Amino acid sequence: MKKFNITEKKDTRSGFGAGLAALGETNPNVVALCADLTGSLKMNAFKDAHPDRFFQVGIAEANMMGLAAGMTIGGKIPFTGTFANFSTGRVYDQIRQSIAYSGKNVKICASHAGLTLGEDGATHQILEDIGMMQMLPHMTVINPCDYNQTKAATMAIADFEGPVYLRFGRPSVPVFTDADQKFEIGKAWLIDEGTDVSIIATGHLVWEAIEAAHALEAKGISAEVINIHTIKPLDVDAIVKSVKKTGCVVTAEEHQIIGGLGSVVAQCVSQHCPSPIEFVGVNDSFGESGKPADLMKKYGLDAENIVLAAERAIGKKA
Amino acid sequence: MKNTQELQEVASQVRRDIVRMVHKVQSGHPGGSLGCTDFLVSLYFEHMNLDPKNWNMDGKNEDLFFLSNGHISPVWYSVLSRRGYFPVSELGTFRHIDSRLQGHPATEEGLEGIRVASGSLGQGLSVALGAAQTKKLNKDEGIVYTLHGDGEMQEGQIWEAAMYAAHHKVDNLIATIDYNGQQIDGSLEDVMSLGNLGDKWRAFGWEVMEMKGHDFDSIRETVNAAKAKLGHGKPVLILMHTDMGHGVDFMAGTHKWHGIAPNDEQLDLALAQLPETLGDY
Image 1: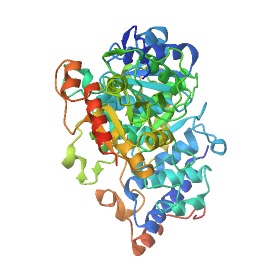
Image 2: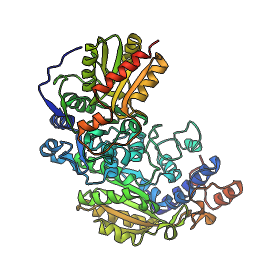
Image 3: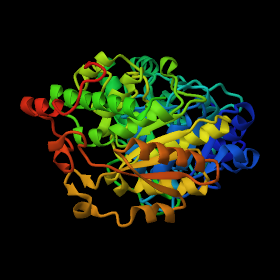
Image 4: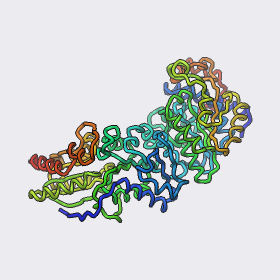
């Protein structure tokens, strides 16, 4: 298994902030809207450099989604910023009618997704957002894995025509992808090849999948690790190719298993290459307050549980 | 630009279109459509700077219109087609399968003149404000118009948008409320009263005007006065007093024709009251 030399940990939301600031310099059509969470979303650099293109909306997310839809008329590319909970469930109908059904070029940028929001607890720890967003026709859903990838994704979606949901988070996690990477929407990243099991992970769980692959290697098991940063459109070819080779699969995500990466990978695998599959994700429950690392351990979203799931999947192979 | 008599003729044809469209498919919303006919005819044939033949989504340097209460799509479709956005023959496809004239307005089928889907209420003002701010960023002098139902004022998002417009001084937008006092379940007063609607908007920082929605002179005078108020740091709202179902006597002044279609006999009764002026589709 490939070894990464980790020199720093950073939060993915800061990757978003850096990407947005960079876009401010390169793309005059990019505008940003925020619902009273400018600091939390790391949007201050853009706001300070381009006050004329930054719109403070206040605590009114429904209005923000409608405003963003309208700003596309005339050629602007709006990036909305608030927590993932308020970017999706709170405004689902506004996104559905004014953005997705209307085909508007809005980038819905959502921070503090998942359990790793931590102490604020379940009211804010949305674990259903990927499901809600990927059900919408026309919507692209992206969940990058580290700071560099989030920055690259933020910049890439400005050049993509159509509504996008970009999900990122609050905790500092290892930075292991290249700073100058080219982000290709819809293209899975094969992190390392293996032969016994495919571990398909997204977001913060990608690093846990890499650690799990190392632990499996120590046990003599060869794991293939794939980073699915784009959940929709799903890179079906990459998944099928991998699972046909390894014969079983584990999915890993900081989200409900129902409706998330696990659901779509199961659909893909059952249609194209029926194989044993195990799911690492939140199993139909809400979260709770706690330190991010403690929560991820309690809810089974870590390398240790990915290892156990891989062993179960391998054990089910015919 | 048309004079009052010409506007009345267009309005009569639009009302014929509305009842014929709704009758043919036996569904749709005639009441609000009839009530807003005179206003939409005025906007599209007298006030708005438009280029129907070269329609595009961005509408740069044109005036834009957003229908927030999308269920009154029949009147909008009729006015758009009569103004030259698409063939009037297409009105006969309203609400049928494979039509561009969806039950509620949509962009998915590429119908000229429509810039956002509406139907789920309360969203149009936010979208229009966004479009108005993009016009400002683009140094585009076009005006953004919106129309809302009065029942729609019960949606919370309207008031989020109202607050935003005043705070951000969106003064290139004229919002209009179809103040007919009716909604599906009955009168507004019975279902969910709005109190003093004009005072509410004034309290939110808007310029508020009132007009008679079936009097072309009142519409002309008020819209011109509203235009004159633009550019002074405040958004402008017009409370438009209308009768739901106006123009067809048995449909007028009641919520009962909000969302039902006339039968054959009722269609004949309605058309007898509405001279065919521009030729039926």
